[in-house]
Length: 384
Image 1 (cartoon, rainbow, N blue to C red):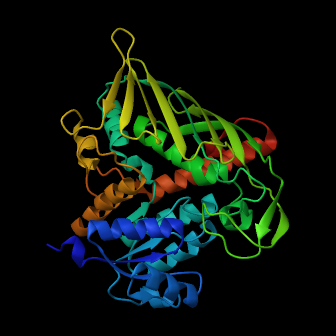
Image 2: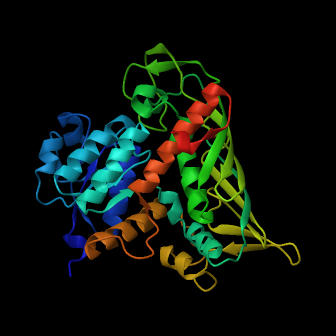
Image 3: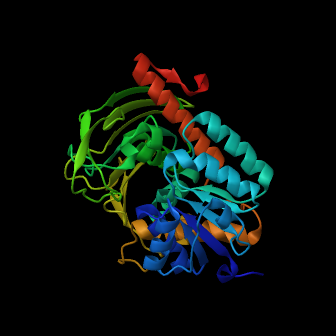
């Protein structure tokens, strides 16, 4: 049987998240054959900076490389659809960053292409792979919380809180109609759906753009980096923040907020799931602790510990107890699961990584949110 070091990967995208993918693949032992940037010059420079052998001149050069088995798509959102279609047509496995596409029509086609390809097609909802989120999924599956009644939480950041903050995600043509919802809210929706098993049925949404004009640097700006030099004023039509009510199939209710302008909140995803027997809650800024709430006994805080966790939580954990597993570790745990299925030749029974079907569901959610905000009413996902 082949080993991980016999699988070749390539990464499309050479910015912040593409580098995270590269580092996790190297830690896993997968061969990273090359990178593709926004231009041949960018490809060559970043390949040299990161110690990768090849900087591909274009997508055709990457796809014609027989040493590449799996392609990671970390390009801007508007490019995902065309990149994934080309990758599957070339007979390669794909790991695509979220959101899967720009529209649900595109993502629906991608689901069909993925099914027809017979290849591993994963969407990068890495937050599922913090071990205590896997633990919580297992607890709900085993009935430890009882029927889930109410889900609440948020995903708040501050990296776009100033008029001088800039990133391509601000531009709807590149990032999509929704920004805080599409960029980080989809993580919350996917994660809570994974943990609880609930599927959104209808939404009522309110979107806000607090900074309607921003100063765009005339030069390039990396994600989370400050711009410098000359700027130009640009009108903004994407959401800085959102408040969303959710009705789930089966009768449960939910409420969430997203924000990229909450100063001091660097990357805080919080969820709280209230069940008929117990509740559970988690915060990405303290990822090694899971709150477990009780009515008739003391509440608990479960620290990530192999000796105390269920099988799903233990399988996702890598480091010993007390050695915090964070953002980069979630990618390692996610890729370890995906590449195990690449070696096995298909998605394994009980696999917990997100599929293109999951990615399509998030696109339906986003389009329902957009329609709800425009029309000021509850929107059923079945309307999309």
